[in-house]
Amino acid sequence: MRDHSLEMQKTPTRTAASWAFVIGFVLLAVFSLKVFSSFRNSKPKTTASVTPGAVVTVSTARADYVSLPDTVIATGSVAAVDPLEVGSEVNGLRVEQVLVEEGDRVGRGQTLAVLNRSLLEAQLRQAQARYRAGQAQVSRALQPNRPQEVSSLRAAYAQALANATQERSNLKQAQVTYRNLQLTAQRYQKVLGEGFVTIQEAGDRQTEVDRQNFLVSAARQRIQSADFAVEQARQRLLLAQAGGRREDVEIAQASSQEMAGVIAQIEAQLAQTVIVAPDAGLVLKRNVHLGDISSNTKPMFVLARRGELELRAEVTQSDLIKLREGVRATVNYAGKKASGKVWRISPQVDGATRLGYARILLDTGSALRPGMFGEARIEVGQHRALTVPSEALLGEGGDYFVFKLEGTKAVRQPVTTGVRNNQRVEITQGLQPNDSVAVVGARFLSDGDKVEVSDKS
Image 1 (tube, rainbow, N blue to C red):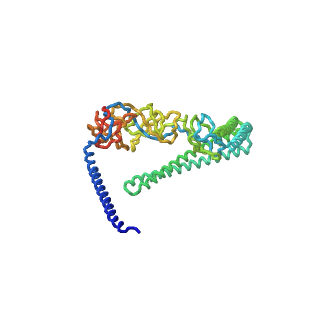
Image 2: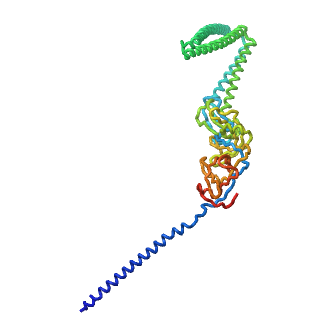
Image 3: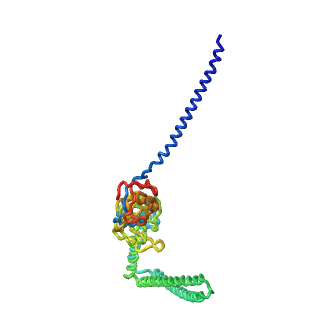
């Protein structure tokens, strides 16, 4: 058996020891917390006694006068210097061949397209047959005319006289009507200011006068034609009555020569079925396809003569007077550059926009194409300008500023800029000569920051 009285004596002793351990641990923890809190509260006091240093170390430069180029900046579109429209002079023929494409370079006289010749060749054969018939008439004119031929020519002469008489009667009637319309129009003009007729009515009367005047002129022309026909008919009758005379031969020969002219015209049209380049150049547009019908009102091709292109740049009136022909220009486009020279300046300025044009001939070999947009920079001289290094200028979109140094303090100073080059930028407003501005490190500054200058200009 275990001795229960001994266990009962040990239990109170263990309990007292446990409680003593717990109380000691708690006291140690409280002491540790007080020590840590005291250390933490004392740290800010030590930090607050430290003096802050400079925000940014910068280099500086002074605003100074230098010579900068006067540059005229103008924008515009690229176009051909001398565009050539090439087409057919013959209507109604089918296109059989198209031999060039857009972008091709062609030489003077090079074939661009070919038209169908069959219709013109048929007309040529017909004209040649009529020419041979005219030659036969010449031979016949040498022989006496038969009585029935004389009668026919006499009737033709009488008819020509009747036609001429009728045309003169028509002229008299047209003249009477013209005079009446003139009087009516004059009366309308007199009462127009009194409000009895409208401007439209007065205008209509004048229009009728103009139309009738045209009819009178046409009647006179018809009389001239009728008289000419009478004379022709009379000559034919006289020749027929006189028999085979030299005049008959001459008339027949004239008719034969007329057909010879028709033949020459058709042969020229046959030559025009081959469409050729009038000069060397670059094909800009091809407006024709196989099977199209030719028309002398629609160009088939548009060429840039000699492949020359220009930038037609709009220039303000103040800049236009600075330009002169022959000065060089740099054209910026799509992140690239091309060179050229001003070869024409517009003689007048648009009254609405106050803009003129500078035509800049582009150097051969540029990648510019007609219709592309470009910006031209044209140097027209030099001028003295107050400038700072380009690195000192901050901002964008026209809202520019620099950090001006006042002792060890950087002050944000708005400025207005002018001409720039790779190293410096003109300041037209905001700075005075010898003002010191931050350069390297300026981008890290704020208004009012204290700075340390690494080098003094």
